[in-house]
Image (cartoon, rainbow over all chains, first blue to last red):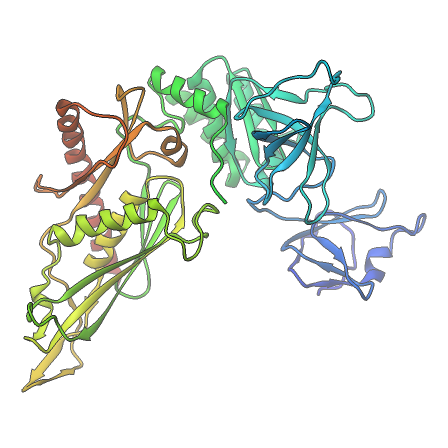
Length: 243
Length: 273
């Protein structure tokens, strides 16, 4: 393991699964609060050391002394608080069974919607797509979902996604699409008005006025994964010209 | 784990787009996805990429004793394996219907069409013949495994070189001679069609999502001489004779394109070696 000396944003520190991070290095700049927050890809071991469990770039945020590993994968592992897109695959009296692309289906309570009561609750059928939030995700347990903001009880945009098309992308690309400054979405938006919902489970819902436009948008988003800014501009330009 | 059915959104969008004359990945109805052929370091190893579908084929050979009723016939065997690497829906050790269909079709397309000259594999009649084995591994599943596997298998056979042997009396020796290519009579290529909307819409080279939504499919195996080697239509909606003929005409064009691409790739590879 390379020693952690500087905390500059520009420095790329690659970690591999099993790499131990010296705790002293992690604690260096946490002068105010001696607390350490571990994000995805890092796990505390039995001997109090901190070990990377994913291959990726070690990232750090001084606020709250947060550390995490930024990596890319295709299989989703549910994490609490993330917004995801799932498909209803089953229905019981109390729960919907939702496929979120993880190893197991997730559970969504039939009352976990805005203003839902025992008498009056939304009815979803098998095959419906829902934009929801992971309310509980424990290891080796089915994740639980909800379609509302738990603090306000409002829908906050969660709920059924009607029409449109859903594409599957890598989790890394899905996270990048959530960046408000994302280049490819801005470029596409200059030519075609559209709406979209990005699930951190790698599912992206896109809707626009016509099928042709939606197909173009989906292709643009999928193509953008490994392109740099200049290539993105050229790619979007050629897509729009072909239309 | 069974593959989840596509959501209503995806299904309805796909069908609506087809009605509008568009496919979900921006292709035309009768277009193949981009085909990429990569050769391994050894002879007879080929990786085929058809869009996001990936298939690896590896040819190997050994000397064995022939059947007594066919003393001069060599062997050609195909071994297909749909592993969980391609899709979580596949399990190790349990053959799905899809796997049986894929391996049967490849067998029909390659062996029954006599693409490989098995008589040419004889070393000593009744004693020693070559057995050629093609292992086909599916690395990633995004629909149309059959076409990708067929291209991989025939390209690997074309690329393969078997050791040359000298027969002295009853024995054979492997000598320091250049390996020789197999004698291949023709290049069978599969073209798969998927049908939608009661057969009104048909597409070539369906993706995984299109395969999930389709109402029926048909695979035509042709060679560049316009000879039909195999035709497979396992279930699905009934079809008119005219439509089958139209499919065949489309397949003729596709087969010519793919054959040309395979030969160009083989030539480029031969120059590099």
